[in-house]
Length: 412
Image (cartoon, rainbow, N blue to C red; front, side, top):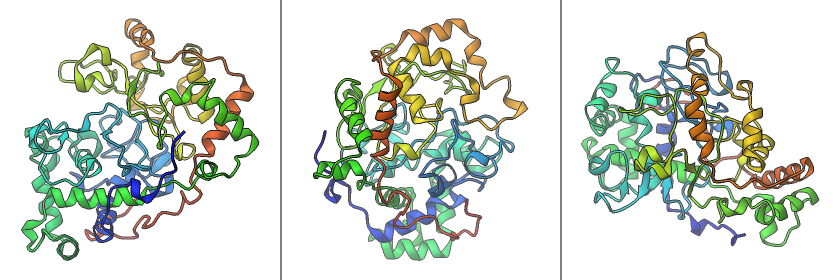
């Protein structure tokens, strides 16, 4: 259990900068082919997610579970993470594999995929995080040969950011807003990827704050419903959920192997083309980190299905069952449980990794969960407690989704 969260626990966010960030978040100008925005996969109508197991990024059509494959080359290999409370000052590592961390290693404040090429001046880890989907081929950049962003990114990760900044500077409304909101901007050329990242960071950190749940009321003396109270007792004691889901955000920000069912294109590496996701090891190259993924926050978790780094489970109850008995749950899992818009093009890819007996044995052998016998009634009580972590105003955000953006491109 933790002390109640207050506004003092969050990084500062300038409202004028957040307003710019809101528009940029939904403006497809930041994608290589101008056909996808941050808000496509982190949509207000879907509690900051997309409702899919694995995202349909650049080239897809539509939003959420109704989004279609379009002409994408492959699915995004991981589930779109929730944005809730990323501005909390305790957050020091992001992405499922933790490839972005607060660090002095490269002299710019962060250990990131851009290493020493990440520019200085980013306000916080969320501002830094906002820059990387723009450089990801299957998320926002597009494929080599399709646009100047994709081509620049394949030369070096930071090469596309000046091109994106130039796009933003070409829009008079953005120039006006940046000039008014940023003391560092007196001329259009002063608008760089740093200001863009800081605007996005100001929006994300202020827009997705949520700490007015029944659990927060319980911390100050208001009783939970009986089933949620039973679930709370299990969560913090016998079920041992809080051994990882601890602190005010219900995450220790550590990395653990849960033994989730494997599927999808995998997060392949230059020297490892197997369609698997090795998790944290992909960042550290340490065998001891194989198949381990970051502990997610559980605040508003009832709103952000499906669950797991690859969205393997459609309901909270399914995910709790897996934690109770990973081997049994993995054996009982079926492809129909994955929220993957169907397409003949990916029939040979989506579940091919499960045919590799040796790889499945390697993944099953790495498990950081000690099974805990839970009855169906106890699982239901834990689920009720997790619902008590939903903010009373979670569906009412300060700025929300804009109707239009300065580029004039359509808003998802």
